[in-house]
Amino acid sequence: IGKSGLILIGMSSPVKVALLGCGNIAKPYVEDLLRYPCVELVGAFDLDPSKADGLNALFGGKTYASLEELLSDSQVEIVLNLSIHHA
Image 1 (spheres, helix red, strand yellow):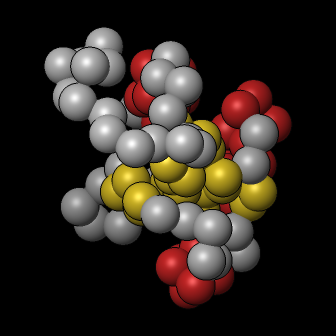
Image 2 (cartoon, one colour; image 1 turned 180 degrees about the horizontal axis):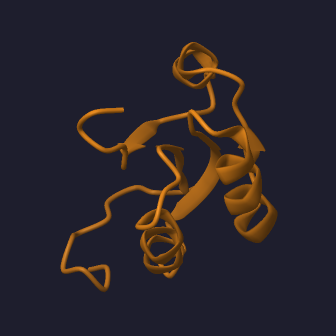
């Protein structure tokens, strides 16, 4: 059982997560997320590329040039949408 109480069955490698939106909540959210060894950040996209660059500089991963590029990356297993509702 993981720290969150979830039962992690058959996980031989970390689940690969990409972020959509790198605003104010992204850094603390990723800090908490990466406390779990079963999670790997593969990259991020933001309408302001400098925000995605900054987040990836801290945590690793690639900066996607577009949402389409993020969604077409076969490595990405989960997209975490942290965008604001009017973005």
